[in-house]
Amino acid sequence: MAVFEKVQDIIVDELGKEKEEVTLETSFEELDADSLDLFQIINDIEDEFDVEVDTEADMKTVADLVKYVENNK
Image 1: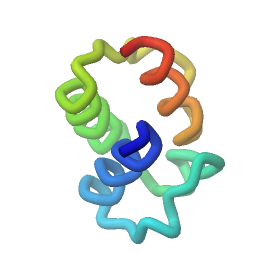
Image 2: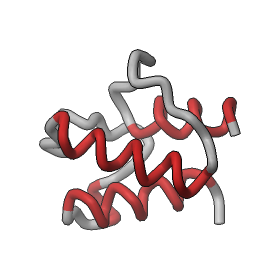
Image 3: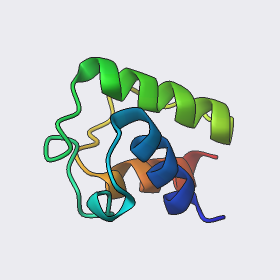
Image 4: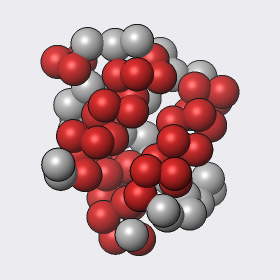
């Protein structure tokens, strides 16, 4: 499974969204994700990919997060 699909699954599970709502271009703001949601998503991603996510990194979209994981795993 590609990084995007795993990240998408995590976001869908955490936010209760439909897969179709979570695309690479989708912003976390569009998903109505608050800071607690983002914290949980990041924790799940760190566990799934065994990567440390820099919370100071500028990640506004799903693509930003996927690219970060791909570059740091």
